[in-house]
Image (cartoon, rainbow, N blue to C red; front, side, top):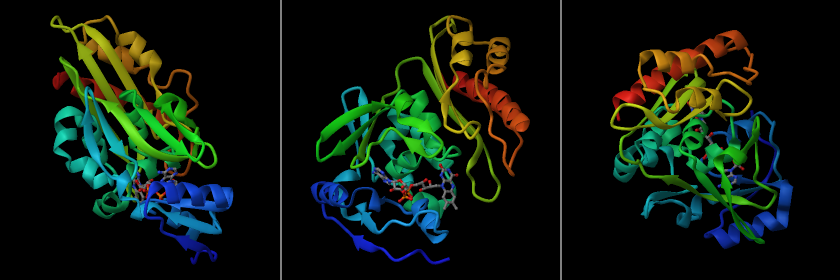
Length: 287
Ligand SMILES: Cc1cc2nc3c(=O)[nH]c(=O)nc-3n(C[C@H](O)[C@H](O)[C@H](O)COP(=O)(O)OP(=O)(O)OC[C@H]3O[C@@H](n4cnc5c(N)ncnc54)[C@H](O)[C@@H]3O)c2cc1C
């Protein structure tokens, strides 16, 4: 398929990109890695009149430390998240999640900002971003604001970004003491997208009691979600096999699992329970 005709812009910096977005408003689409937008344009499910390519906005591609947080520019490609030494050491969950995205070509082109802004219900990053309690910085010609990960994902393919806003940065905390993390996933065979992906951040005290836990689940519902019932069942308890198994049974509590040609709702709920247990077990081993 061939996309409908569009005018192409390649701004050299963020100010130029924001000005173009302000000028063309919802007739324009931002282009990051193009691995979600271009297929949609080829299928004519997206028909922007103007395409604003962020590829020339080099200031949005970085990974840097800032106190007890790490800052990741929106145009940072999956491969750079996967292979970053600082992320592997200070926030291994994000590097592990990036490693599980698609294949080499997808990871070489796709960006963290593009993936989060697209909000595919089967994308991997949202689970990790939720479990990490990340914050996302959005900028427009009117100013900037920080959005909590939990407020960012509104519905399937829908985020809290407003017209004219560009997602510019993701802020994640560094790994604390006595904390283990894990991302596990059942991938759809052809694309690699998650039928079910579970991210866990688990902190235990010296007696093995769960001090804090955060569980993000993707692929199962119209948007990625925090599995609060699992977290509540584990917090304050010794994190042993039976506590993990009991808590994981609540992986889809309050959730309406998706049903499509890849998996029934019942199967997705089953995957969520099983892989939630495995993710917590793995995080526990890594403390
Ligand atoms: C074959 C294949 C397999 C894949 N497998 C997986 C997988 O296993 N797991 C997974 O998570 N993903 C997978 N993907 C998706 C991939 O990760 C994409 O790269 C990602 O979803 C979109 O990122 P992008 O940089 O390509 O964004 P684009 O496609 O360029 O943009 C996506 C959307 O976000 C908007 N946008 C982009 N950047 C910004 C920004 N900074 N601010 C505001 N809006 C913005 C665009 O306007 C567009 O609407 C796969 C894709 C393909 C083609």
